[in-house]
Image 1 (cartoon, rainbow, N blue to C red):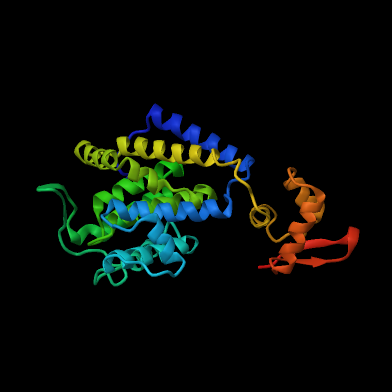
Image 2: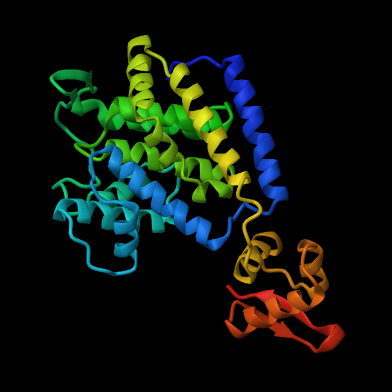
Length: 319
């Protein structure tokens, strides 16, 4: 069955705005943002998603862990962060449409934290906020069937992927398929889905915007539960995505390094042969001398290979 929700004029307005911004992102060559910005956003994503669930580590402490520095913090919090760092580093290894892929991701996220990491729960579970039970999840014996149906919807429904990613996020939280780690996984898997819509989503920190509006996030989840459809939650998440892209576009004046230019051009040219002139046409803002330096550096670093000399020189990216 298709999950219950309605397509509203607000959803259409937001999806149109998001599509326009992705077009601007492509024009500004920010599909793969500058290296430092990508690293910073990745750390913000990890810290924000974990902080929502009570983890105490700061952005600075997570940066230290990434750089193999010693951090003083509760051991459980350190393990959560190390698991999340590993998981986010493997985003490109996961198939958004495969149930087994999601379970493998959960196994990495919750490794050594729970006994049944990567396996669906078989028992009843409820969500408690303070002294109140805010959500009673479906029985454990139907979790697999519900998740299979959800993945069938994701793969086969004709609605646009932007909307389906939000529906998946809500329905995942409603089903609560694992004994722990569901909030982190729901947010992560929406990113995995969105990455299929545009590669820019790999490096957007949607989680940090959710953290900023954490109270609204939980309220809209509860309201959607009460209304028995995800319409409000879809609108909320589309707004978050729209803001994330807006924030990215504000960074377009940041300095792009030669490494960034070489990396971005690979996404454009793939494995085809190209000349310095091809590289210049794609990077109109740089001089011929800068293009030559970029290519020379990439050859020395064995990122690309060079054939021919002078006017006959051609390049190709190594696999």
